[in-house]
Image 1 (cartoon, rainbow, N blue to C red):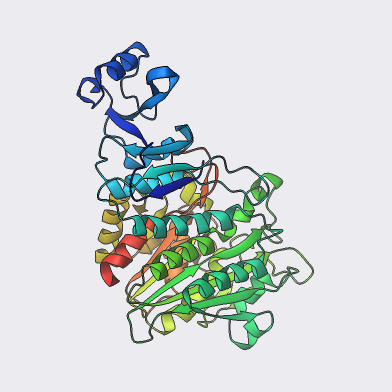
Image 2 (cartoon, rainbow, N blue to C red):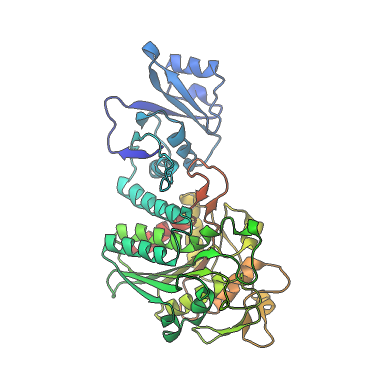
Amino acid sequence: MPVDLIEKKSKTSLPIHLVEEGRLAEAALDPAGRAWAEANGFSGEAGRTLVLPGGNGAMAGVAFGTGKGGGTLALGALAKALPAGDWHFATPPQNPGLAALALKLGGYAFTRYGKAGGRVLRIALPAGADGGHVQRVGDGVFLARDLVNTPTSDMGPQALEQAARRLADAHKASVSVIKGDDLLKKNFPMIHAVGRAAVEAPRLIDLAWGPKSAPKVTLVGKGVCFDTGGLDIKPASGMLLMKKDMGGGANVLGLASMSMAAKLKVRLRVLIPAVENSIAGNAFRPGDVLTSRKGITVEIGNTDAEGRLVLADALALADEEEPQMLVDMATLTGAARVALGPDLPPFYTDDEALAAEIAAASTAVEDPLWRMPLWQPYQARLASRIADTNNVTTDGFAGSITAALFLRRFVEKTPGWVHFDIFAWNPWERPHGQIGGEAQGIRALEKVICGRFG
């Protein structure tokens, strides 16, 4: 149920006792509460919630099991387990800010199409938590989740553009859009080629915020609002989740929301090539050769590897102004899921300092990420006999790495480039998120960007 985080506990607020597994005797429970826990076989098992009885049939509070050294985001389970009412932590969480965020994230519900959001919980911020930061990060995560969860019937390229415009209006940012055949006039031929077969015209969304003299941070997000696979059409089962193929665009908008709300001292730019990879008589074909914005010619080995094509044109544009930090995010390859599963997105960069910062931030905020290598010898697997490169390999090996190597060719001037191959989806319930669209990597990136430019 939705969680309302408040500054101070109310007079009717009930306590939440955090109990580490096997350490019930050390928990701050009164004798009656401890006896009740023992009688119910409660020993602090991870994620278990036990309502503690009071007098006259009322509740006296709850005990929540944290397991043995479990992550703080596990506290998000309380958003679903607690009865409605006012609550506070009787046991101070070790990481107050992350505990508060866990509660907020755990209370998320996607209600656009009538699903009830449930009753509201009011929970007092634990001592030491920055309520403003929790709100900013939570809002960014919710924006990304909402965009991914919305079906393509209501989240095509035009609707994604409108979402960017709403965010820009909220923070006094500017948005410009290059659409349809203007993409050819402005030299974005691969974005145009991928999206030209769709009913809604392809476009490049360009959001800018902050003083032009400030350090430049540019975010590029894949905005393929639906991916049929093109003429190399996916099987029906492969299309079931393709509304989420704009998850990179959704995530960079979520990160932009966090960054602008924090009023960071940066010149923020967000680029989203928004297209549908559809099938029609004018669809691009296997075997076609496309000339990219950068002038690199690309032979199309598979039309289902379209995300890297639209990203390449956008990255080339971003690289032209040499930002201090350039991030791209994309639901790019199934190979990344095979290698690391849905929970652990890989990231790629040649910037050792940036890689270390991302890894440290990932651990600190429990936003799982794993660095993968830009293994140069695999570049040869992208060779083409008639063009500068192919968009895919033919052997099926190292698909996420070779996709990252493909993108790296379009970034030459910016040393601080990092590519994230995200899933943008929870395939099962988690304490801090329901099944559906998910923000991945942006909480860690928020920490990195605030650390550098806050």
